[in-house]
Image (cartoon, rainbow, N blue to C red):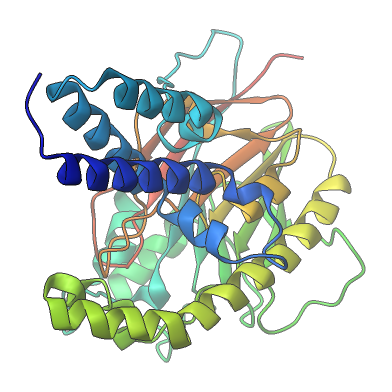
Length: 366
């Protein structure tokens, strides 16, 4: 057993206990209404990182052969196993059976209105070039109103023509920041009588794939509305003074905006859940949830009947947001009905602040 100063050992035990408690709170923060508390939801965002800290604590105590502390850490992971299996799943790609067809691919992506955050002055639109060569049958886009030159600054005419030829069915009302491109006949599906308008956070489409009918619900839940400066608070924490300033900022405007966004997504998620109850047949819900698996909004939308395509077909955690050191999995693909998720792949292109995801599905025999 390695000798440790009693004071250092006490501090280490207290620090470990705090990390274990925060990890459990992060795991189950998604079961607490954001209207009651905000901190648990912030911890749920950071749950994967809290798990890493817990593992580091376990290894540290194992090296010093403090087995009781090791056992407490392991017990923490066991307690968190359910939410952890959503964040870091043990799934795998699946092969379709011969009678599971037709098969189709769906690309979901928040494209930031076609901007290129890595090369803002580029005249080559990498986003739409990626979409064109993705091979996806259905493309659900967030943060795109239409294909006007006012919105998309750099979209070569030849590339636009190729997009239109590849996806002859394009559904957008030019008001909401949601758009569908499809190789199959597609139309807007009016699920409820609630009027549509600017800032609406979902759009439903009915798509005919051969003799099969599929409903796709394209969503974009409330964002955190952080300014560029506020988003960079993590980067500024590299120094002591920077950490102090960032913490002060976090306790002020950032915390208030996070709280507001959690409550707003609660409202959106509940309404989307009501819409789901009105939809019959195979259904896919995809898009920018602005929240992670095991979050309150995720649970409200998923309910008891939806399945997570990512957790079923992938191994380990991923991030779908790629800027400001916010490496979170906030873009989701859920589904139900007589279809099966075969795979989910994340693209590596960083033209947008989100990564694209391409999911492959197959219809089940009836």
